[in-house]
Image 1 (cartoon, helix red, strand yellow):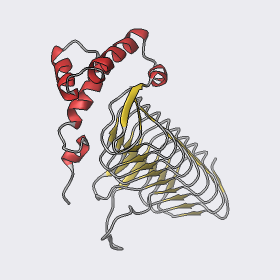
Image 2 (image 1 turned 180 degrees about the horizontal axis):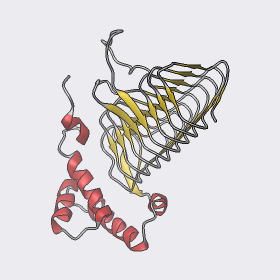
Image 3 (image 1 turned 180 degrees about the vertical axis):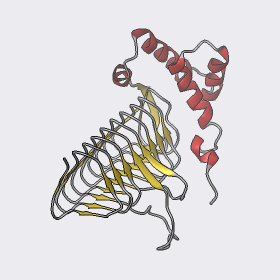
Image 4 (image 1 turned 45 degrees about the vertical axis):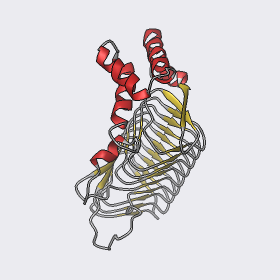
Length: 270
């Protein structure tokens, strides 16, 4: 049975699952869908058409699904939606914006920890088991792949992809794609510093898989030949496992756009 505080406001068209806790002064807007077992602490706002899965925890003063921050928007502008998976922890003052396109979504996966003051812009895709530390700012159209860990106050440029199980150090400014499994730090430009060995363990990779990633990393980043040439040669050898291949493919993909942001090559012109 759900527990709803008397000061909470829930629009009649919203759908609330079983065993949901909605705290003081929360607001659930029109057509929102809330899965079973979710907990909303005080002053949480869930916007129109936001779809929330099961067993998510929202801490005070989250605002999920209010209009994107963009110039030229009018009161009747139709925006897209947000879909959130299961068992996410979303801490205080987190903001997540819907797609700027009426037929598209901002998507958050499952098992993520999104810490205090994080902003996730419109049209982002956050996969699973991601950690976004305090005050990290994710611009629109970004993709953060499974297991990536961003330390405090990381800033990400629009259309940037952060590869799976990568780690970004505090205060990094990321303005081009980051391959999987690496550590990155600094800003404009950020630099690849090494392999995220802790991330490899969190991913559950075997010693053999970890060894191959380490060997491919050295061939990619410690060789005197150009990075793209190294990645292309390794891919062509057809001898890489799935993980090492993902590192090389990420480098090849990012090279397809002049600023090193693969997603920007498919920017919509609406």
